[in-house]
Structures are given as structure tokens and as C-alpha cells.
Amino acid sequence: MGPPLLHLAEDGCATLTLQRPQHHHRLQREDLLALQDHFRTLAAQPAARVLVITASGPVFCSGFHLGELEEAGGASAHPRLFEHTVDLLESLPLPTVARLNGSVYGGATDLALACDFRVGVQGMELRMPAARLGLHYYPSGLQRYVSRLGLQAAKRLFLLAQAVPAEELLRIGYLDALVPAAELDSATRALVQALQAGAPLAVQGMKLSLNETAAAEGGGAQTQAANMAERVARCAASDDLREGLAAWAQKRAPRFTGR
Image (spheres, rainbow, N blue to C red):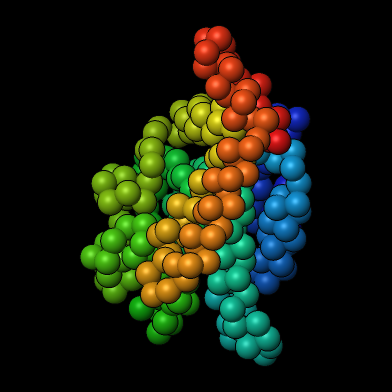
């Protein structure tokens, strides 16, 4: 048991593994700080192409350690610690995949939602109990739910605070794929390989632009347009675009370098 573990493979696939199975991988303050460090490391690592977040056992993550909310200095020392951690994950330029080995509860539902894709196992469930605890969820998490799943789905998950089965999570778009446990690794790997097949500059640039477009309501349109224009120009002048066009003409697989 301990903070999340980061591993970067030679093919550029990074894996973050939660390390508290005896407590259903609940996240303590030290875990959130470790996750932030890992996210900053990955953001500065050109060799990282894709990030997979996962765990082991029947639960992917049970969210924030609620006992720390009652401890002196726990929540009050950094009231936005969880929110900031999830926002850092969403802002990563490299694409991210949540390999959901089991159920998700509380803040873990937003941690997974901040990833670009989610692959779940049959039999898992989701529950957001904030209303039953007297908690008002943090702003960026609410915005993420509404922008990705729609207002009515967000109201159902937050206001009813009921367990939602895997098949319904797939229907409302929370899950991108739902597979038997025995197929979780192969389904995750297929998704990772599809992401690795794209040109890094294009994949990363479009990920950030899509997220900014989804969050553009209420202002920031000029900044969004400027950011997107810079990414478009960077890809247009890249070696990867020339390689991609050449590979297409020659009917071969491209060899992208991220430049």
C-alpha cells in the first residue's frame, strides 16, 4: 500500500497504478500530491505518448478519504486539492485512458471522467454520494459532467446519488467500452495502440482544442481561438505532416517523430 505508482514503457505508454487495494484505492492527501507530481512529470516528458490509469480488485477507486475531511487541517489546509488534481489530469496534453477494473465512487468518478476514454468491466457500478454526505461538489467537476454527459445525466448522478450499473454508464456515454473482465487488458491495449498510431502533435493538439471548445461557454473564446490557431500552424509546419502525407501516398505506415 502506498501512493500511486508511475511506469513509462519504451513504447511511450505510461501507466499510473493506484496502490491501496485494502481500502478500495481511496485517495489520501499524499496520494493526490503524488498524482500531481506524476502529471507534471508526464507533461514535461516528450517520450510519453499515452497515459493509462488503473488499479486492481473489484473497485477502481472509492474517491477521497472522507476521514481526512474531519481531521484538523485536512480539508481546510487545501480545500481544492482534489479539484486541482483532477484538473491537472484533464489538462495533460497526452491522451489518457481510464482502465476501470471495477466500480467508481465519489471523486473517483470525476477522476475517470477527466480522462479522454474509459474502458469498464461488466458488473461495475458508479455512485456519486455527495448529496447524501451534505457536500456541494466542486465547480470544475460539475462543469465536466455537464459538458461530457449532458445536464440531465449530471442531475441524475449528483442529485439522486444512486448506484448506476455498467450498462447504463455505457448508454449515457460515461463508458466508451464495456467488456468482460478477461478482455479488459486487450480492449485497453487496442485503444492505446489506436492513439499511438496518430501523429503526437496532432493528437495532443486536437485533444486540448476539443477540451477548450467544450469548456468555452461563458467566455474565453478569443484565447481559445488563439490557442487553436497556434496548434493548427504548428501541425501544418511539422515533419509529421510531411511524413503522414508521404506515407499515405506510398501506402505504408507512417513513422511519426512528434516534430
